[in-house]
Length: 67
Image 1 (cartoon, rainbow, N blue to C red):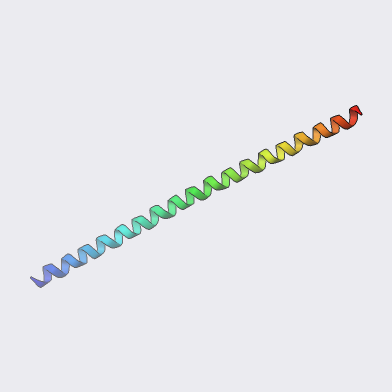
Image 2: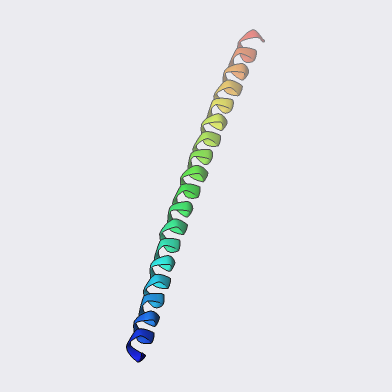
């Protein structure tokens, strides 16, 4: 009877370890995706900022030429 109890404990322990590893992998993937999304958003914001600055500079030059 003892052997069955010990093997049961080993099975439960192995199952818990696999679940923990799967959770860790899933968590790492989610963090990677969140990082990628945040990075893409920052790059997009920087692009719009540069475009806005370029547009503002062009308007300033055009205004200066008219005066």
